[in-house]
Length: 609
Image (cartoon, rainbow, N blue to C red):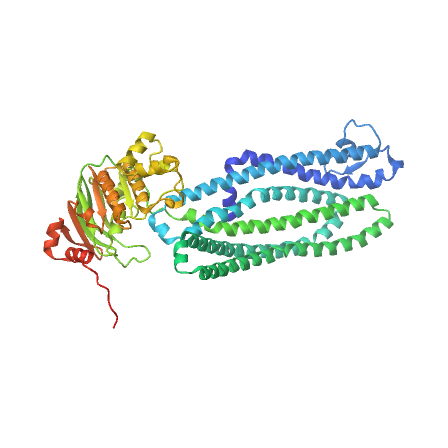
């Protein structure tokens, strides 16, 4: 399916509205042709009062015994030619205006509805992608595609589509008018069209290319905006305001250059049409002068013909502009359709089962993993271990050992390159994602809160939770006291990513959120690594409530959580090199002991000689 076909396919659910708009716009085109026809009686009858009593033929219709008379437009109207022409003009304009309004509204309804559906489909598609997809695609580029690119497509499929129908039917009606006056003269006049349409088609291809480049440059500007505004503290602390300003200026100039290239190409069509149109009109004047002198054409007929021809060039010029805008929409749609075509790596297998309530164990069976960007670099190397129900297993190791990658396999953020992850003996790739993830809660070091109320952040995942359940979860997470200290209490809006809260407060809200979900499996990813001593103490108490009667896999550098673990797994370079309880691992004097000593040794400042 072509790009235009893909875009228009989203209007299929709104076919009745589109069909009605097509009929209405067809009448608008017909009315425009009637207005051109009414020029003749103005010159031949209104301005010649001696010919008022004879019916006036407006249009000869091939195949019919009679043509279209002025009396047909105003049936039963009694009066002279001036009154009939005036009434006909008013009626045509009035009916044309009503049809244009209704048709324009309907086609815009179709366009906006179709793009809303497409935007929802793209969002849903992106939302269901694996973690690898988000690692490989820039967030700003995705936002630009879903908003800015689709905005350009929306322009093409709403009021530009309305203009396409309007101008297309108008061109057909006016073409019929000029052909019925003098078909030889009409064909000569229309020989100019190939000289207009061929360069316009070439211009359209360049417009599509320049539009795609402009959209990519716009995504680059958005990326700088997002990074600079979200990281404003880093920018200010390193006094990089001038550098960021220059980076933004460079990106903005690149966007300006791309947009100007598009404008330069789009602006070519109009002067091309006007130059060739002027040549045609001059030639016609010479030809018509001889016809009028020979009395083979009346002044009214020639005037009506010329005006219809001039009116025809306007929709032709508009249609070339519309063609260029559709090319722009196709260029903008490229990235959108790339996202729609991207395969979903993590999805339910055909016939996937609902995972029963967890009650036995989580097992890693020969698990290996490598990221798609570096398939030769194994992040996890043949892991074999089991976490029994009710057990607290801690995972420790130096940075880059693969700890976070390991725990991300449990909720299927990634799938193993080799081996299996089993929950109660079920390969998690054979069960539905929903039934798996409903039994897991995660609390990470980088807490993500939404720009919403405290209450809605806590019950995220359980929107049907009662106010009492929300408050009980907050109380068990040691968050109720500071929440009630806010002027709006649980209705306080926390700001973007919880910017109005301290690190400890954000972490306790995330714990309350996990408590309210009440899952049997809990994953903690260095949940206290960025907290001060007092906040860490409160968070540790909240974590104690959260971990009670649950199966817990915890990544931690702080020993307060590690000491509670039934077993500790020590990782290095993607493999488990040691495992056992805290005291036993200390006594072995291996990697765990080394990490332990590094954490608690006194660090003396190094004096440079």
